[in-house]
Amino acid sequence: LQEMIKTRGVELVLEQVSKIDPGGALCKKILYFYHKLRK
Image (cartoon, rainbow, N blue to C red; front, side):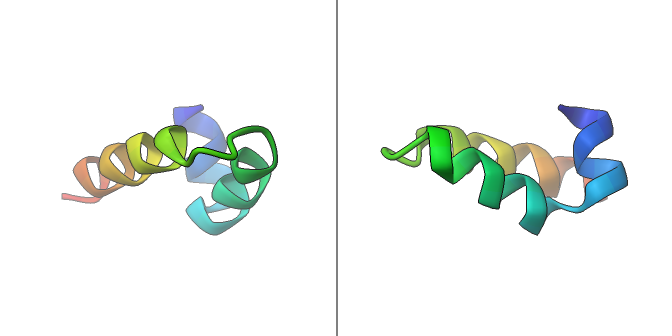
C-alpha cells in the first residue's frame, strides 16, 4: 500500500479504496498514513 501511494498518488489510491470501502474508515487511515509519510 505504501508503495502504491508513492507511485500512483493518494487521490488515485483513495478512489480505488472508496469502491471497496463504503464506510470510509480505510480512507481515513490512508490519509492519516499519507500525511505522516509527507512530513
